[in-house]
Image (tube, rainbow, N blue to C red; front, top):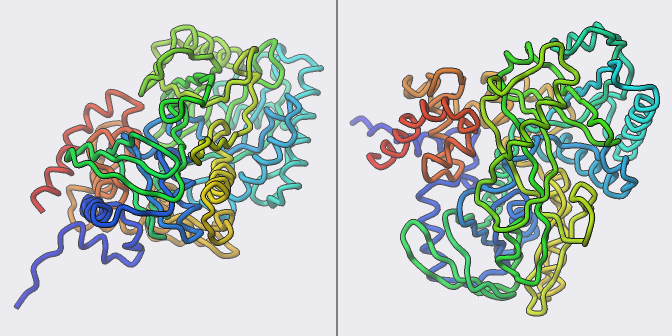
Length: 533
C-alpha cells in the first residue's frame, strides 16, 4: 500500500530545518483562538505587532510568562517596515551630544549582528565622497564622528572583523563602491561600517516566530478594544468572534497609535520618507552613499543598496500632526528634497522618472514640547498608567530589544508577577546560526545565497517547497527573483493571511508597484491552493 502524498504544510513541518513550534500557520491560529476561548486567562497581553511588540512577546515568553500578542493588521504593518533597514551605531546621536543613546545603539547593534540575527544583519560599508562642496571643516567633523563611532564599536565589544574601522579611501575606491558619484573634484572619501538588515519586516516575523516557539500566541488580523491594565477585548477580524482576555499585565506597543489605546499619551509623529530606485540608476551601488545635508551638521541623506536589485534613498524628518494614517504617503516636497540632496554627489542627476516608488513611516516620538521633530530625543519611554497599563513609545528599530526588556520589567513591577531574568540579548531568532564561525556556517547552507540572506538555516526548507513543485521555483513576476515557494512559505510558516501580507510584508514586492501587480495572481494562487489542501 502506498501512502498518500504529503500536503505542502505536512512536508514543511517534516523538514529537518524547521522547528514546528515556530510555525505561524492558519491551522495554528485557529487552534490558538479555540484554546483562548476555553481558557482566557494569561500572564501578559501585548498589543501591537511591530518590532517593539514582537520584541515584548519574545522577551515575556522567554521569561516563562504565558503571552498573547494582538495585532489589528499584520506583523510589521506599521512603522517597522518603513525603516532605512539600518542597524546603526548611533553616529547621528553623537552629533547631537546624545552619547547615552549612541552607546545603547552600538550595544544593541552588536547583539543583533553577532548573536540575535546574524543571518538577517550584515556589515554595510558607507562612503562619504569628498567633493568640492564638502569643505575642510565639514570633512574634519565627519571624520571625528567616524572615529567616535569606532570608539563606540570597541566599547560595545563588536569585533573589528565584523565591523571594520573607519578609514580614508582614494577616489578610485569611492567610484568602485559608488559608480555614479561625480568625478570632477573628487578627492577621495571617508569610509565607515554599520549594520544593515536584509529586511526590517523579516526581523519582526522572526521575532514573532521565535516567541511562538517559546509558547507565545501570535494573533494578527485581530482588534483589541476596551483595554485596561488587566483585560483586553479581542475581536477576530476574520470570523467576527469576540473574546475577553484576563491578564496580569498588558503592554501597549502600538507605536504612533499608542494614544488610541491610552489617551494620556501625547506623541509628535515624525514622517521619514524614502524613494525606491533600480540598481541600474546607481550603476551597481556596493555601499551606502552618504551625502551631508547642507547646513545641518550630523544629518545625511543615504542611498542604500537593497535586495532584489533596488536602492533606497532617504530619509526625511517631517512633523506629521493630525489623524494617523494606516499607510503614510510621501509629500512632494520630500521627494524634491531627497532628489536634490542625493544629486549633490552624483555625476548625472536623478529625476522623478527614475523613481520606482516611495514609502514613508511615522516615528512615534514622545511629545517634549517645542522645537523641530529632528531635535526630539530618540530615547524610548516606558509609561505606566494608574490601572497598570504599560505603554512603550519612542526609540528606534535598532534598540527594540532594550525597549522590550524595559517594558516587560515595568509590567512585572506593575502586576507583581514573577519571572525569569531577561535573556533576549543572546537568544537567536529562527534561522539564526550559532557558534564561533557564523559566516562559515551560513556559507555551508545548501541553498542560494539570496535565500540564506533572508531565511538563514531555514533556507533549504524554502528550497524544498520549490523542488517538490517545480512551478513554485519560478519568479512570480518579471524584474524580481522572488519565487512562488517564498510566497507559500510566508503563508505556511510566517503568519501571512492574505495577499497583502505576502506582497507588502513577507516579500516587499509592493515597493515596486508594477512588480506587485504582476505578482498578485501568484499570491492569490497560494491561498487558493491552501483551501484545496
